Length: 435
Ligand SMILES: NC(=O)C1=CN([C@@H]2O[C@H](COP(=O)(O)OP(=O)(O)OC[C@H]3O[C@@H](n4cnc5c(N)ncnc54)[C@H](O)[C@@H]3O)[C@@H](O)[C@H]2O)C=CC1
Ligand SMILES: CC(=O)[C@H](N)C(=O)O
Ligand SMILES: [Zn+2]
Figure 1: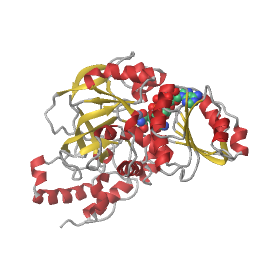
Figure 2: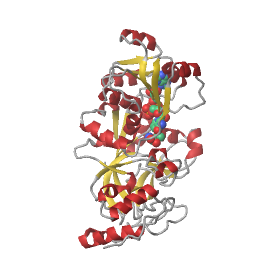
Figure 3: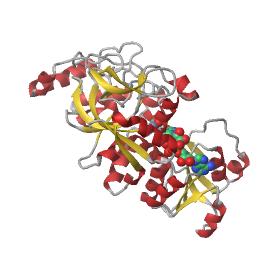
Figure 4: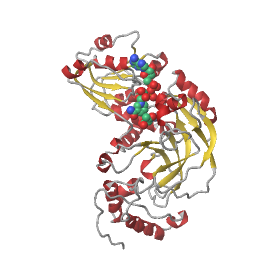
């Protein structure tokens, strides 16, 4: 049995062991050996500048090595995935949607099959969702120009099955149905070290800063892989990433018995409204300026879907018998006008979670914030992995977001999918990569 000398000091990082063959790793004998080797690997210094775990992850790996396997086996041992890319498959080409040159458009091209390191998981992609972020990349707007390196395989919303795992991965098996957290965190900053990984200061985005999921295969660190529960609808599983944006925002403040205002009935606003309803809100009022999206909102069962070009929120409050304003605001449009509208319709002490990304600087009347004692919380991504847990159990307990998906297309028809997204006459667009 392995003897452990000492727990490594905080701030030191660790390096994984070299690869075993997959066949070897499957025998019990070798699995035990692998476990011991993994524990040993904790005591090797990590390469400078590579993507190692923080003290917290090292502790979990250490606990796993000692036999307290539960946390470690949940896939939190992230020792060096970014730095150590040991190819374990024969390099071939895969079909992928690529930002090939610095101009509007995306190109269906052959890209190198992703390689996996010892802590990575190779996933055969089955379905993907098109995100507003992908549309920004397609359009090659100012944000995309300053953010996306070219060439880049894009996309971050997906579901697929595990094809292959690195030799250090014991929590996932080929065939598992999985999605992936699109934020790959550093594991070393203050927040990562404290377990608050969604607050990482050095987050890398899948399909933004590193190769994405609009491809036949995608490779991710095992710490970014989420296994779905049996029976999940794969269309829903394909959009867990934006559902996670909605859940993270909608559950930022308790909604039970509260009146909730959602500004922006895009796919994420629609899902947030459904989540607020599922989590026990009294009234859920959603606003937009797009009749198609307001109609989708009605189908999802909101209390009122309001076209703010025609109806004032003050009048809606009166019709609903509300006395003092909305208790919770979920900003999902990025529109300055919508945000100002929200600020003017909150109750004293109201709480706002803001996901929408304004495209320009946005001036507000701060008197409303100060004298009405409002709380405004910025929201980015999903909490790792509380949001993923909450999504899973809410879907299991009847949260239905399927009406948000309006288009299902084979990946070869991606141009039609992006056109639908850009037209505004769509909810979520899902591309099928198995066709
Ligand atoms: N913070 C984060 O982690 C993330 C933020 N986002 C942002 O969240 C927002 C929502 O995402 P999606 O639903 O995909 O965006 P979307 O662009 O499809 O939806 C925004 C909706 O707001 C509506 N809108 C425009 N002006 C309005 C107004 N005055 N009042 C009410 N509604 C108005 C639009 O018609 C549209 O339906 C976007 O700003 C997006 O960039 C998206 C993903 C992650
Ligand atoms: C910004 C995005 O598009 C993405 N959904 C995320 O949560 O980071
Ligand atoms: Zn997205």
